[in-house]
Image (tube, rainbow, N blue to C red; front, side):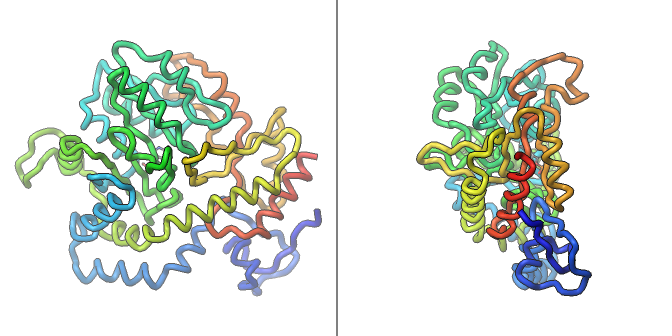
Length: 397
Ligand SMILES: *Cc1c(COP(=O)(O)O)cnc(C)c1O
């Protein structure tokens, strides 16, 4: 395939340039295609965002005001859950959920080794023991047979991750957890709006933890997170932990955190929330297009389909490049100006922090060697995807 030559300001990414917006820099330069194009989103929403931020400035109430309250109400309604507690980050949401469930030293929590470190870090942070089970190489999520095999009398909770926006089989997980009397805390940081069995991920377990990190499907323009639950006692415990362990000001009942979402971030998230269904649909369409463009390439395994009734939200579009060729393909894409990422180059059990345990999970380790995440965002154009796919086909040939 002929490399695509595009005029324009490279810092804007190819998506904007293909619309013919940039004409200032020299022609014959290859564009840089980002993994995610946030500049475009900001440009499209700017008038609404500025108005929302101005509203907060005019109110001059910056912490725990109306914006946070309304965001919590709107998100709870969207997700179909009783309580939503806005927090400082997704990591804090995990830590606070574990503490609200009474998990601490002496307890084991089963989770996946193929995730962002924060999942296991939260378990270690509260003094409990992260216990890993291996993953399913087709879904990249926890293998539920393996999970059941590592449960011990000290296991108190399961912390599944809906990785890359793909829902885990929650019906089976909940059956297992109920049978074993275990708490379920969903790490749905990468799956805002995804559905398992017709219900939103995060609302199926005892608690769900979301991240509003800017690159997540629903992202703030700074750090942010959220915890949801239907249980009023867990909700009260989480809300207390958010503000220094107090229900009433200056009447602190336990040791907590300062983990509040600020009003400006809440106002920004309220501008973005009404778009999330469309944006997730845009990601699904982009994934379907990659699926067409990249089918039948020997040595390339595309993300597998989800069962009927489930909806994935493609936080990442992550394929597997087999036969030890991943790094070469990634380097070739970079030469063509195409960003791609390896999430995650080391599984959690092999990170320096846990390496002395000498654990081994062959499938998670194999995925770390083979996965490659391709550019995806809700408005990515067919032209950009064709360009990327053309290079992948050439590099895999
Ligand atoms: C992003 C992420 C987190 C942490 O969220 P922060 O808001 O960055 O603290 C936790 N788990 C997973 C799987 C994530 O992707």
